Length: 313
Image 1 (cartoon, rainbow, N blue to C red):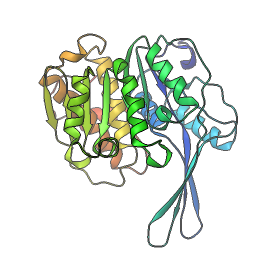
Image 2 (image 1 turned 30 degrees about the horizontal axis):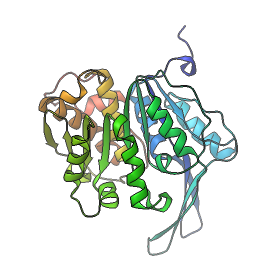
Image 3 (image 1 turned 45 degrees about the horizontal axis):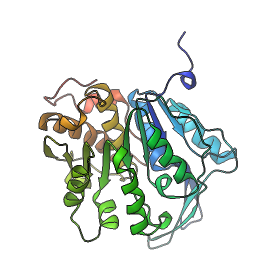
Image 4 (image 1 turned 120 degrees about the vertical axis):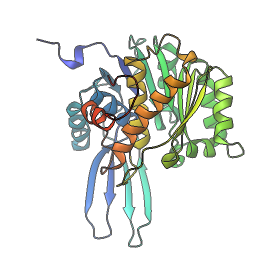
């Protein structure tokens, strides 16, 4: 009999917020669903088959139960003990479709010894909101494997762009993989083009930089090559979790096929194209479904069956 998932060594350790998205409709109805960018990345990895652990601040309340059940269903092991109440992000929808947002975010982590995970990923609010941000930064500094970061900017919960840039700059020496959306880039560096920002981080030593551009696809840069990858054309239901599915698929493929810890900075144009196509397909499947609902590996295999690329894991 195999060991329980929570006792297996983590192939990927994800650090960051798990919360409940609350949507209040004009007619007074309310829905609640698990959310948070890092949690979505962990779920994407778990559904694809990676061993993944999530360090997050999750409460002992009913919202925490909802998130914990969602994680368990996707084979994500919850590493941090549950305590207190669960964070929420509430959107109140007006009759004209506009929304007002209210955040109730609690972000604090206990200090832990360095991880033995192959990869460590962190992103979004967790990178910038204290007191937890310092623990996340230390965990990334101490990570034994390769480190990936997705700033996934949430302006309402961020310090100033200048402070956020400073926090990101502190981490650059340990970041191996950086994914940044055009929206993230515009907020962090309003006077620079996103590809210039990507080149800046690549020149600073980040081995793989990815710029996601929504329906216009993505651009991937290593020290050996750069490529532009188109996004598959699909009927979009909503875009929630698309970038997180892309990130999860990217990390999964790096771990499974490209041996991310060995020669990552020398990824060829062919490697980058395959990475971008695989990840963009995962994102495309996600946007055809309601909410952050990343695909399983079998679903992704089916969507890639006609592609003439290296074998799908």
